Length: 168
Image (cartoon, rainbow, N blue to C red; front, top):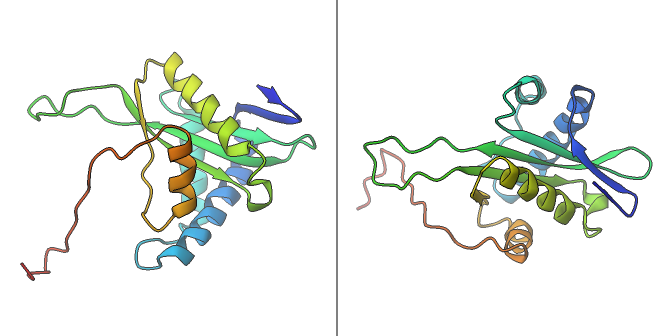
């Protein structure tokens, strides 16, 4: 897909270094939001992750990249299928996936994220995926605004507690 000098395409093995750089830069930005929640994953682990996703011949998941007119990767979206709930649970099974969009700061505001998310939705629909979700920490107001602008809404509530916290 080409849009005003921007190309959205499936990532290839040659893109792994750019994907690692995007993931690490994104982690560093998240670390500034809440160091108690986020960490910067080791580069080799991120490299192995993307290499494995891209090597999966079943095409279970997708990584799409945005390339600017100069051929530089300026963003990515990862679409990772969710596991179906076990038969004994009450959740209705639905083919779903998590999306994770990352755009270089200097490319933000130019429609890169929107183009990536549109391509991710198209890929998901072609795969029979009927529901997409984006797990966003509440302090990431920019990401919340971005996904809301694209039709994502509150989809439940996740509560958490530490096992040794006995305040209640």
